[in-house]
Amino acid sequence: MDGGGEAPRPLQLLAIAADKDAADWASLMEEVSLEDGRAIQVTQCAWDDIMVSAEPKSSVPIVVHLRKSKANPKRPTTIKPDFCLVRNEVSVPGKDFRNQMFGLMFAGVESVNSFSSIYSFCEKAVIQAELFKIARKCGLDENGDEVFPMMDQQYFASYAEMMYSQSFPAVVKIGSAHAGYGKMRITDHHQMEDFRTCLAMTKGSGDSSSAYCCAEPFIEGDYDLRIQKIGSHYRVFKRTSVSGAWKTNTGSAHLEHLELTPKYKRWADEAAEMFGGLDILTVDAIHESSTGREYILEVNGTSSGLAPDVAAEDNLHIRDLVVEKMNAHFCHGPGAAVPQVLVGGEGQAAEEQVSGPAPGAAEEGAMPAASAPPPATVSSAESF
Image (cartoon, rainbow, N blue to C red; front, side, top):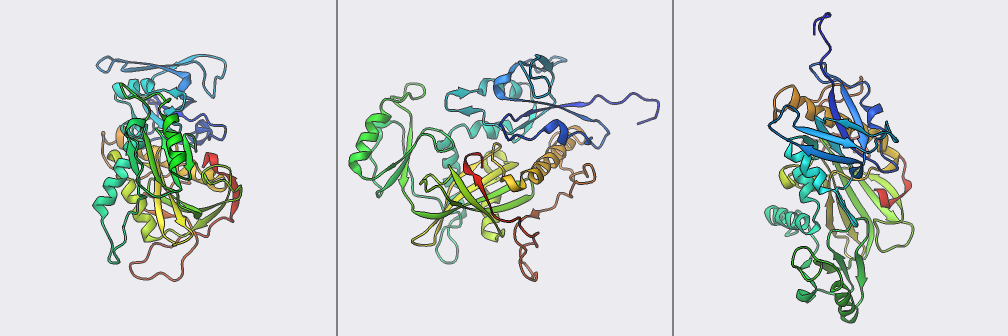
């Protein structure tokens, strides 16, 4: 840009991130600019703070009215977002903000993760269906084991279809609840019948007589695994419950960083292809204590929680990912691939990066070396 020219209009980034531990995205983006010199202005809020109207063919395709934001907690404002970062679920028990998201989609606003993938993640059954599709595609390895090992699971459209045929104890999951909600452990067929009568009292979608339900055998696990992928950066965590809860993703847990193995990387890479591509994801698995087998339980998307001891670093990875996507869209045309820019002297080239314990001497074909992990910590599993 010439010294006498006007500064280009900053791009508006709408960051939907309002958890108590949410990063301050305005501060993280403060020293950031795109390759063409445009700055990034951040407005951070929650889904329930926004009202959206869209008119794609007009000169102002999108208008977002905010009841409040992180910068203006008591004053309404209006913005015209160019890009979105979504770190909160759009639909949770008792709250559904998909209509607001539809307005952003209607106007053609791009986001991380993509709005189409976030929409698909609103229904747990749709996520599980995609995971079983991946498992069928990956098939078996040379030892006859599943490459992408999913739990045995049954789906029932309502209480009327519910005829569980797997082993007991079992776990039942109602609809698309998160963070341990809508989930019960069932010891025998008598309790299953009691649960079925309770399911009949829930509200289903459309003309369904109740909510849908998934059921699976209960696995006694000695620890959980979480494989995290942010862009091209990976982490692996081992979570051991210290609260004694059978729902290992709730309560407090001892957190340990593990090495990224080819198997875990394959799981994350396969999951990253879901619904047209996931920029931010975590794969949750369980290690069965009696057999040593590992089973994939679920995949989380754009709202995946970060480990407290490395959250600041991982938020920088998310920042760099957002800048990369914005450069691709606004500096090189929609859909173009660009290398990740250096951001504030701390950016990293868009190569595969790995966090975890450093393996031994590198061998040909081995996984890339990894930095030494932070010490194990005890953290709340509800936000991670």
